[in-house]
Length: 100
Image 1 (cartoon, rainbow, N blue to C red):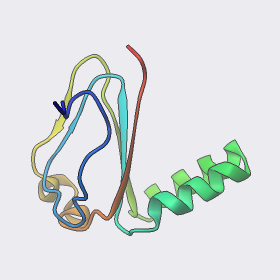
Image 2 (image 1 turned 90 degrees about the vertical axis):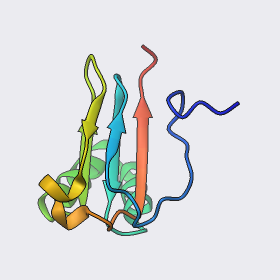
Image 3 (image 1 turned 60 degrees about the vertical axis):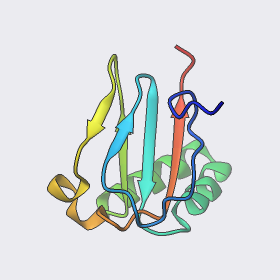
């Protein structure tokens, strides 16, 4: 059976995310446009610096949120409380977890 806490894979939740749960050792990135992840991966393929620059630019332009849970789960109960512009506007995401 599928355990949602053992993987970063999940169903398509385009524009229907209101809260987030990030497990320890994981980093979750969410973009407000469908090509956000593809654009990030394209830059990362060029070089680590190009990927880092794209990451910083997306954060600065409020096109992306990034969360890392350290030691315990991190919960964002209501996106519209602290990240109103991303509420109901999340179109792509990526989750990376370390083997802990």
